[in-house]
Length: 257
Length: 297
Ligand SMILES: Nc1ncnc2c1ncn2[C@@H]1O[C@H](COP(=O)(O)OP(=O)(O)O)[C@@H](O)[C@H]1O
Ligand SMILES: [Mg+2]
Image 1 (spheres, chains in turn brown, orange):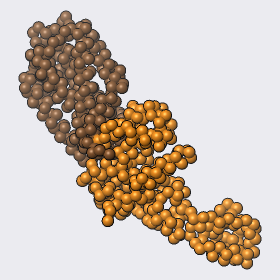
Image 2 (cartoon, protein in one colour; image 1 turned 45 degrees about the horizontal axis):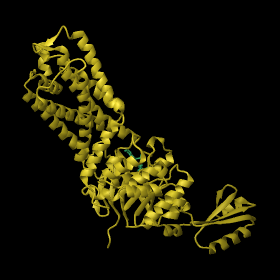
Image 3 (cartoon, chains in turn purple, yellow; image 1 turned 135 degrees about the vertical axis):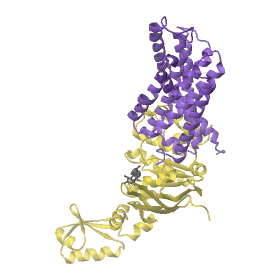
Image 4 (cartoon, helix red, strand yellow; image 1 turned 45 degrees about the vertical axis):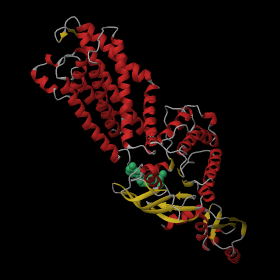
């Protein structure tokens, strides 16, 4: 037998994780795109003529980056968390625990696959939104930075949730009481400048706000917070969460009894 | 001196107050066909899991081919193939996809020649492109065996591979495992079928409540206990029982070690007027040894 390569181990796990969602792309990619478009259809229809943001951006256009990012974040989280909990519950997690995969390779593969799904959904939402309104991207590099970092942050969060949860309903609790509210309250549907001062203050403690806001900056060149501040906050959050996750994986928390 | 295939030193594992492993010391030499026997809950799976790095021992140390499973896990895991007790599978993939992926996890690409060979030996060729979901339990079990072999591990551990598996598959599986052993692989096996263990294993450890309570070559285990039996059907069963037999349905059973004991026993039965109607001599029997070991432990 030739020399075994650790890199091939990582690549295979990444490939497997991508294949896992791609084989059911109707549910994992197409469905979230459709969801976001329904939001867009309804909200824009109801509000477009009444609301403008940043003095001149039509509401529908304002909504697009928020929805794109929201879909990206939710699907990145869903991918890593559901893959892990499914493997744990069915027991087939042992197939990735028996081989000599390092915990770093394990982390990187789950996070990258989840980011990829998030990006696919994001691109899908953005392209399809052109049916309603054209939203060109003013600063593509900023867009990419926030998309990848935000996706990685939520994917990492999904790894934690997937490892911690023993049952699907515990995962749903994570999703319903943390991920959903924080995204909804992050300014996907409004500029936080339209909020009362207290709520503006509170929003600044929500990391999701910086992901959405920074991403929106890349479209319009305008945002509620400085994109550099947003980038810093999102990077810091990712670094902290990644460190925690790597620690969990290194000690075998809940995975190696 | 060659390295042992498996070395387990002073390993304990506690789950709260429960001691699943209460101090295990064990060495399995390269090339052995080794049996790990014990009732449910004895700790066999926990020991195997510790060896595979699925479970972290509370204390103690384990090595595969000289590689510590904690500090040198890469090399240890590359050398170990484990067929898990539970019938787990990934429903997303076909048999071949699964085996390719499993090879990749171990760091091997372009492994199809070997995969084909495994599929062939396990009679899985017709199912190679079937989705895992569509396979019967026995077929899934074979795929588990195949998955454990993709990286050609020198040490192979099978945790109750024949539980709930039909006779035909059992025969085929043992044939294959014997071939692997003949090719130089070290085999460790747990099973509840003691005839299988007796026929296959050169050495056996018996576990009870987290401890090894007997460890010896199979032939030595068989000869060191009253492991042959004389069964008689008699007119006066009570008389035979008084002579130290145990009731087994209509029969009364006596254990013995030396053939000479049979003559004496028959003479005493005649003297007591038991009236022997039928008799049968059973060969060495691991089941009797097992029962006796468990009783004494
Ligand atoms: N994850 C666990 N948590 C708590 N107890 C466990 C766990 N795994 C095994 N045990 C206990 O450890 C003991 C040994 O189990 P096991 O190794 O599966 O035995 P065997 O394989 O010999 O049947 C049993 O009492 C079992 O209930
Ligand atoms: Mg067991």
